[in-house]
Length: 124
Image (cartoon, rainbow, N blue to C red; front, side):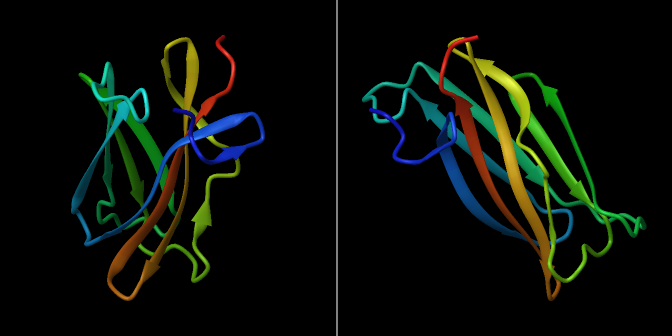
């Protein structure tokens, strides 16, 4: 089964919206191949918005075992939020690059993260 959403030459494997309290962690699992009765791969992603004294919004990620952790920090993104200018590659699956793209904003006392995980169309 092919993903229903394509952007340029990338298939969007998953997209979502997270509303997180400060220092709250969200876990996302994407089971591949999409639509298969039995998954052969699982992409495990963790999102966290720690409280920091920084005025600027920063983005970082690391891998811990089979989990990819993304952190969005900064005391207050501007009222319109921030977005990654380009999808960032964070891994490979079946010879195809995996990317993360997100927009981050703050509404009241909550962190709002909209994200998608696209994958390159062709094998590298």
